[in-house]
Each structure stands twice: as C-alpha cells, then as structure tokens.
Length: 248
Ligand code: G3P
Ligand code: CA
Image 1 (spheres, rainbow, N blue to C red):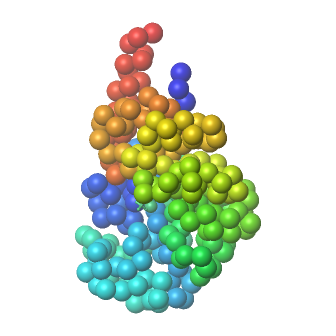
Image 2: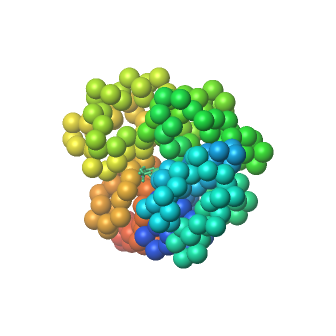
C-alpha cells in the first residue's frame, strides 16, 4: 500500500478564503488539511509577516513594499474580507496545535539577506516546534543560511516550470541536501521525473487543484500535495481509500 499523502493547503484554503490569512488557515483546518503552506517576508522593524507578494498592490490595492514598511503601517490594510496581514507568531499561536505541518516559504531577497532566516529560526526555537516545520524557498541561499541556523528543520527545495532542472538545480540540490523537492506540477515531464527519481528525494507537488490531477499524483506516490482546494483533496483521498478497500 502507498503511504498516505499529506494534504497541504496552499496559502491556506485559498480557493475559498483570502490567501495567506488567518481565515484561510482556519478554513483549511476545518476542511481536514494536515498542514498549511504560507509565504514570509521581513518588515523593516524585523517582524516576520505572511504575504505572498512583497508589493501589496495586487492583494490590498495599496502600492506598498512590505519589506520597506513598518509592521504598524501594514496592519490597517485589508487583505480580503477585512483580514489583516498575519504575523508568523500569530500563526504559531493559533495553528501549531491544529496542524501537523507548517510549510514556511521564504520569499527571495536575492543574493543578500535582510536577516529573515534568523528571525524565523528564533520563533521556531521559542515555540519548540522544529519537528512541525518545513522551510522552503526557490532561492538556495535562503535554504543554506537556514540550515546553518537550524540543521534539524526540514528543508523543501522549490523548483518551478521555468527553471531548467538539469542545468541549474541538480548541483544546488546536492549542496542544500533538502528533505523534499517541492515541484511545480507542470515541471514534471518524463525526462525530469526520471532525473528526480535518481536523487530519491521525496516529492511535494504544487499547485494541484483538479480532481484528475490529484488522482494522478496520489497514484504516483507524492509525499504531499499542495493545493488551493484541501476539501476536494480530502474527499478524493477518502474515495480512493474506499475503492482500495472494495478491491481487497
Ligand atoms: O510552495 C509551493 C508554491 O507556493 C510556490 O509558489 O508562487 O505560490 O509561492 P508560490
Ligand atoms: Ca508559496
């Protein structure tokens, strides 16, 4: 029997609620997700905030760079349905008891860092929650810096469709030594899939929102599926369990 796949709600239950908000995380919990994926930035006054975009125009209508802002200047902004920007510490307070896994994606600051890794590590230490956390990034520099601070925390190496897997990532993946490869589903052509299998690193696949795609990845043995539709994935998994019980 294939091991059970984790249901990770992408930016929370973002198919139904405003992405990366406490409401989206609460909804993911009620729909049976095992964990949430969220995106982090560091404000000018060194608070770790949860937002996908660094510039908040798309989400709030306000043309503002969250990394160049003070937290107090962000809390009045509407992230959808009157939700405010969450602090990572608020997510820990409310959701560490509800989820088995919290996947923290560090959004890239380029070659240099503003210190975000250190601030995330401090929170994880304070809450003693290392075993529940997976830190991911497209930028291997963040992963390497984080590894130096907390080698016991799992790392997810993010790879998207636009990147050339063989040429640009294979070597970097070996240096980082991640626990998982977090792959955009479109990337996985047969050639790259065979290459990935050679590395024998468990795969988390994103962003899988349709029933037939969920079935495909469940069948392929993905360790986790990252989805905007955790409720749908839950029911697809319940259905496939019933089917296999019928066959025995
Ligand atoms: O973790 C997978 C996925 O979240 C990476 O892409 O752009 O949705 O943060 P993005
Ligand atoms: Ca993300």
